[in-house]
Amino acid sequence: MILGAMQNTEQEQQAQFFPFHVINEFMRDDYRLSVLQKVFTALKNISPAHSKPINQIIQRTVKVPGFRNSLQAPLFIKVKSCVSTFEHNPEFVAHTLAAWAELHPDLRQQVFDLLTGRGWELLPAEADRTRMPGFYADKWRKGETFEAINRAFDAAYPEGASISDDDVSLMVVWLSLCLPFSEETDSTEEPSAESQTDQS
Image (cartoon, rainbow, N blue to C red):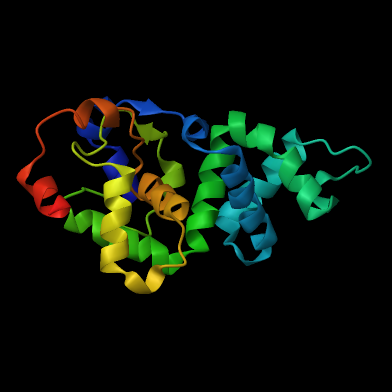
């Protein structure tokens, strides 16, 4: 299924979205830096569809003292200098997360398989999510929590013990294009048969 075609449906046009940089409300400062560092370290290996706009946004918005071209700054300085852009620029967030997901193809497929197996409706794993307007405002799956998903991931992929819960959770957010704004409300409802099975 083509993402562009999906965007033209009446359902997509009526959906409400939060801009991509809203994800900062759910990210710890240290993890944000970790994601940026991973992406910038491997930027030369990222597809031009994402590496090019990342570099363009950095050149346009990031100023590093002592460097006429901010792209030439040492990695750690560049990462720290890009935090503000990540916090305020939705396009930068989208391409950074797409690049991060591209660097973790096995995790992307594993989380995709896990979520679809739990009844989530997702775009194809390889779809270009940067073309979407942002995160869906109200499509987080009822009864789900990051904790439950991470437990299910550990059970399904015991060989992935070295993968952090943060990475699994971020991949969940990126693949689903959902943030758990309604998670607290939903968790107070009666658990579904599916969620009861997961907890047993």
